[in-house]
Length: 150
Image (cartoon, rainbow, N blue to C red; front, side):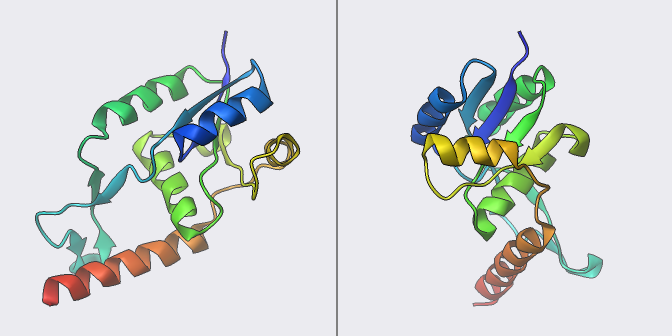
């Protein structure tokens, strides 16, 4: 039976949220960030408007592959990372790394882990907020550029 796949940051949240949502939903954790700038070099293409060059974080390859396989057989994917720029970036990285489609993927946010809040979030999905993603990426790029210079 196909289920809706919900991806959260924390494994502890996953178990609780899955109980609230019921049998139509499978809730899995990304265990936080899944991609980052490569550690061995600056990983920013300065000639291409400071384009960040991401790679799957070490130790996350199998988990990303598992999530990708689950997404392929899901009715839809709901990205439910935290409601801040880091959470938005995690949702975007999941979207990119798992090769998800916009028509099939939505972003949900909630401020508390209660049944009411979770069900309200599922009833009110939205797109990934690119402004928050861009803000997080700008901070990350500046951190890397300054860090490599120091």
